[in-house]
Length: 78
Image (cartoon, rainbow, N blue to C red; front, side):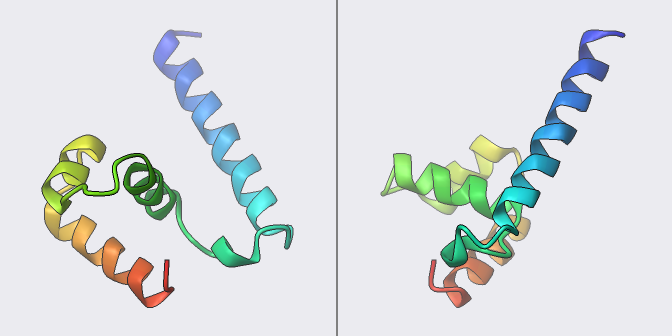
């Protein structure tokens, strides 16, 4: 198996385990958030004064997509 396939499989497994853990009821505050939303929260926690442009660059997402995700987080009071 090549490195890209291995990394893809690992990331898939991490995502599944994380989703299972988040749905377990142990984390009611963040229940139902996506991996993208969690990534945004992580960046903002590490760099509280981050701007959308910087987060967009870090995650390599278009600003328009990121803006929608941030609005969803705001609606969830996160």
